[in-house]
Image 1 (tube, rainbow, N blue to C red):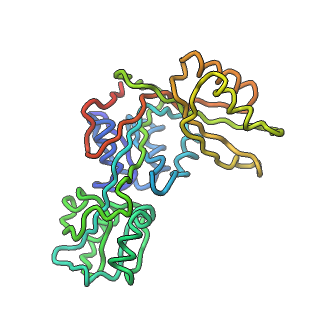
Image 2: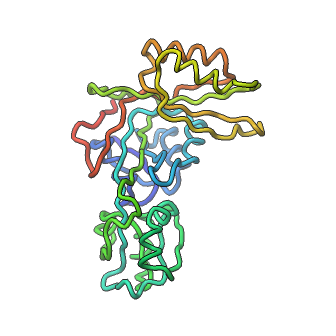
Image 3: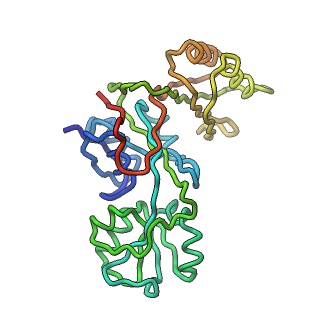
Length: 290
């Protein structure tokens, strides 16, 4: 069986994303995003699944940087509904809770519940939601709660005090499936998206506008733009773009050729089917990585 790496512990939302994107792969946990990318590049796993943005808390910037650092290809995406839950050791009560542990984004996504229901509880950030649940079960604390998935409650034998405690229930995280560039994704009739990164070296007035106009002139929609500092070049930036269409489409291909003449650096990170929106753990017609 092929293996897909994800960051976190068993029960993490990233593990759920592996099941949605790559249902025939065995999920394997790694403690950091850096180790996920290393495992993929070194051939220890066949694919990787990473979060790239959340609808409430924005982009996962470290993964933008890691996409640039490694020769990987985006082969699929999914928007996964994130449901946060308040977990305690068996017998724990709301009145017992003095500390709440979870990933920083989960704490932020549940700030309204925490403010209203646990205003005096200390909030402690850890590296993973499922890791918080695992730590809670190991320590057997009665005055500590974790914010994590329902699967984490099952895995670590915890009680669920409150379900769906996120401040906004339109809480989705976009996950990307990555390969070493050897796999391809079946289109399954879905519209394509292309992700690129580029850098403008010696910028002049209007250079960013002129770069983006290359796509508008060819009727290529820009779905997202994200900027990151260009390391070693203060005041200069990398630009990550998501485009509507495949990089072999005539308009996209022509715009990329013109951009390559204008920019110091252009790289296509992947062309892949537009993502599914999933409110569950499985996509019936998920893309397949060969």
